[in-house]
Every structure is written in C-alpha cells, then in structure tokens.
Length: 69
Image (cartoon, rainbow, N blue to C red; front, side, top):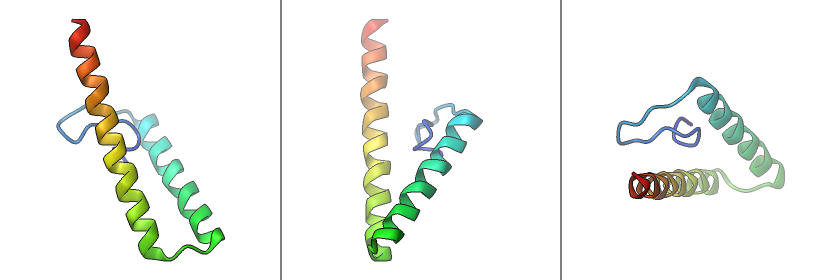
C-alpha cells in the first residue's frame, strides 16, 4: 500500500497522505474485483503487477530527476 502511495522500496520517503491514497486505491480495486467475480488468486497477481509497475515508474522518475541536476 505504501509503494502504491509513492514511497520507494529502496529507502525513499513517503507521506501519510500518499499511504492513505494507496490504501484507498487497493481497497477500491479489491471491491471491484470481488463485484465482478474474479477469483482471489487473480487479485494477488493483479496487486503484484501494480506494485511492480509502481516500482518501475518510481525508478523512471528518479532517473529523469537525476538527469536534470
């Protein structure tokens, strides 16, 4: 939830608001997945893909920031 909220797993900083937003996003997705009848294993795969995507996005943003300075 913290990674989705914007904190890097490599020692980044996060905010409480970002963490709350990450929790809200995950809860919203879980409720949507349950409502459309997707099995529980698919939920875990989906969340794993989102976490990997957020890590890749954070890495890309860090590289762009370093290029500027």
